[in-house]
Image (cartoon, rainbow, N blue to C red):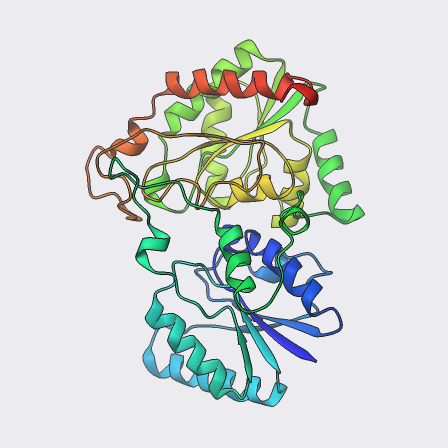
Length: 360
């Protein structure tokens, strides 16, 4: 049996799909699972660079072209290829916020490819996606990873939360772990290692760099620690500015592949970051996350997966806007989070991590 899995998106979108992929792999134990991934330039990370080898047998890739004719010819080639593969089923693992019109269009496309069984093609209503509490504020919602499992259950794929959501989501090869270990051996002291990721690709999720510098300075002054800046190549210059201000530290931004960066994060005591893919990567390897979030989304939906994390946010009247670029000049939900409030919450987070497991 050949089963197609459709998934596209950023690093975070891919990582939160791993629990659902575990359920799909268990359900189709003897099938060949083939993942269809989008490799357009806007997607910095391909799913094949992240997903554990035991979950997917093979990958098919396609690219969306910017102009209409190229896009049409690209989809025609993809349509012919999928018909030729003769898949018996397709599993839909795109984000829950995909509009209903797009879900139905995708459903029609895969049906036209001759695929008889379609799983997970259920659009979510706005009330399901964006619930409001009694105070007319965005209400707490379930994590995107849990939503994917629930959607699969509606089409007969059993979810086992304790098994599917179990951390870590990622494990590493000996060579990946060795590269991170050897790189660190030439960089760090014997102090505990704390990761800081100051960057993110969504403008509305940015927290001022000077605040990260301030938090790092306080950690250096009060904790026996080595700070390591993590992220992609775009964050390397930010890391240099931070280390210059601190007078010490390690800049790992842009130095590793995604999986190698995951192995590096697994060696850290904890992680400080924003609503971005690196935060999801840290959570996926089992490293506790202290994350600074705005209020553009409902709380809970895109929080790092797991129970060992702490989220800091600042309540605002415009919560739930879902804008990628804040239209307000003062960007209150992020600039309203002061360095002092983050420091106070960070100290509580660190104290919690130090407590014996039996007391947590």
